[in-house]
Length: 104
Image (cartoon, rainbow, N blue to C red; front, side, top):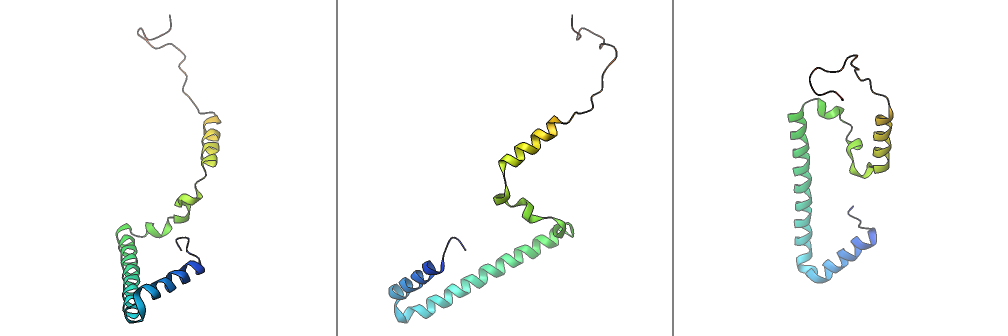
């Protein structure tokens, strides 16, 4: 969760307790909870809207495959080199093309 460990979260809570004081701390915690619930609701609404607009294809996409943390440039280059090393069928002409485009 954003690189926060349990110790860091506890330190932030203690620091907030000292800065806000016992009078304002419950109201601040309530506002923080409302903000978190609103963000979660916003994200779930956005997800359901995307599912509605994209249709059934949305569920068949493997989203983990598109995760940038799984990107390995060495693998991409290796796959590209394998593809270019495979012989590709080319059409050969038995006669040189007409016009002045030929060698000579």
